[in-house]
Length: 202
Image 1 (spheres, one colour):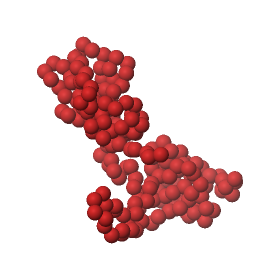
Image 2 (cartoon, rainbow, N blue to C red):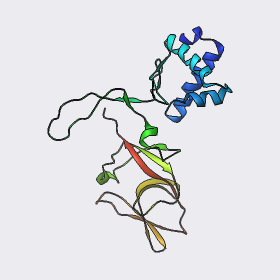
Image 3 (cartoon, one colour):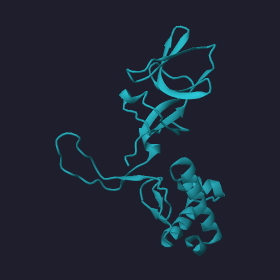
Image 4 (spheres, rainbow, N blue to C red):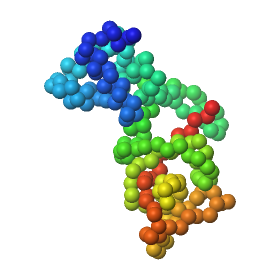
């Protein structure tokens, strides 16, 4: 057990980083770790992080605020970006140095995101397919035409939001399906607005 070689404080910091990453999708900064443990100087945290590196539990990349990877955890806080790929004519392959994809960088303005797995094909013409994960920002006042997650009579649905007079139109992106119309009298709530789509090819 790798944790057995750690001091009590190193173990606490390692477990904190792991829990933080699992709950939020990204690793904490040095200052966030210092604040959590009441460590006055960031250098005190850095010393513990260096020890975790030496003991093989952590990998740090300099020059980035959240550039830590837990080496023996199935969860990884970021994905390396190796360059660009053509979807048309082939282009020269250029590998980029030390660039990584992190959700917090993709969605810096949208806090509290949560994910839902799509069931059905009502948004297929928006290229949202059955089995996709959609990232939703909690928001109750969407703009006209935004894709939203709406709660209607105890069920949730992903549709585009339109207001038509005294009623709301929840419009599918599937020409084979009809829109849903609701009014203030109906049991309906807007739970959030679509901010991203993740698809896993198996």
